[in-house]
Image (tube, rainbow, N blue to C red):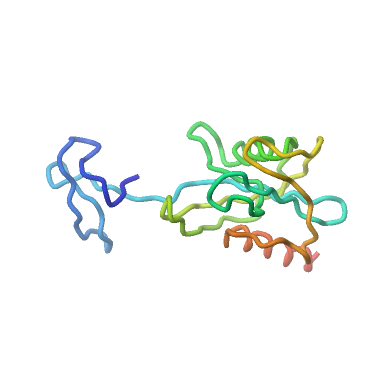
Length: 169
């Protein structure tokens, strides 16, 4: 992914220049014509609810949002499907094994570090002994009506969509 400091073409090594093409300003190689399309970084999030309808949140142990509460989530590795990444992140952050039951939705969010993140959220049935993973400080179920502050607008929207879906059921 090119950033403002990107200087050279990944194809031919020539210097990139900012130019307007396809309605946007992009980094383009004037030698070979390669266009650097900046795409959102894909991630996956797990929505786990217990029998009383509470939602599972993790207290983050890393930035961004360190010590704040969020859905179990993380970036999709190059060899993974979104579903595999969702279940891996759930295991890493909570020690729970999961089964995906449905797609909640696809969301985007601006990011200072990555410019934009694409979040694919799944509802997951989980089992096992709940405990914090290596990059989480705590894991806990919260009532949908009494959630802690959640720093990510995408996670807030995912939970809002879950709430609205629950009201329609």
